[in-house]
Length: 166
Image (cartoon, rainbow, N blue to C red):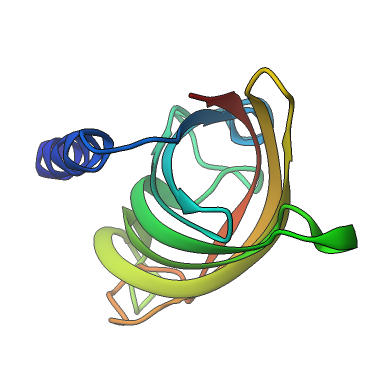
């Protein structure tokens, strides 16, 4: 897990060193509903596209139906925005989520740790105030590709992010 955090920080520093427009956000939906921290950094390339990185960590001690199965996820993404008319700030996102956690073994008799990678798509809308406050609402779904024992087949990507553009 420490390796993922170090790689994420290096990636963020490399991207932000030449950045002109940046967003830093926290997913309040995950914090309230699932007892998890999900932070996002996003670099605005131009009015139609952006790249970013989300880092998710579960704070829940016990797993129940209202928790993600993932303990830690790092998700690089690319967003394509629609900058005009009624579609202004609506986006489609492609992502690859490297996720790990615990799940049932193939025989269902024990719990195993897993690491897998999911490719997926999401869509949503951004609201941006004149002073830089940002609210993102999005929903999406990815499929784990490597069929690791204990890993779920599908990985959700949903949230309500709040933060700032600078």
